[in-house]
Image (cartoon, rainbow, N blue to C red; front, side, top):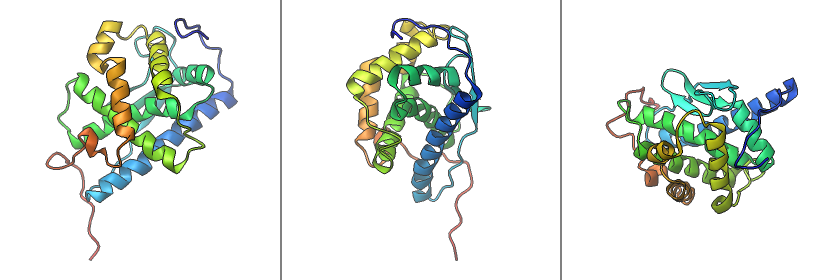
Length: 216
């Protein structure tokens, strides 16, 4: 499948659909493990996001991954299937897509008033996704083999822009999410860090959820 074109995916078999759902869940569980440890270190309980999996046709306005406060993390299984085909089931690349949306969930938890959709939160979510990948890859390199990010990440983003052509123009995409070099830099910056503070993570003064109770 060429990166510059996209064809409608064949209808998924029940087994294929179940496999994709398990892969998404594996990534979400991994992000929950990593973020739970971070929030716990700050004395705060982490609440994993709700996850909605759907299938949308190419060009549909709803096509693609996303995060909405009311719904949670939204993952398009047709995108996951396309990434599977092009990148031969690379769990790390697929994981970056999901972990980016989980990053928006973390932003909502740490900054409940965040509503602006601009480069700043989008690039932070890329940094969070990179931080997750560095941690997950160290724990489980079999499920999340480290790809050649310099080559593969731009290819993946180009493919997703084709699949999600009905959402944003190329110019708008860069304005909202940042340029590909910017996004690659943020993913790499997060991967190199032990602590997501390098991405600007903080719960001080912004968390409105329950504090963990200290045992007597």
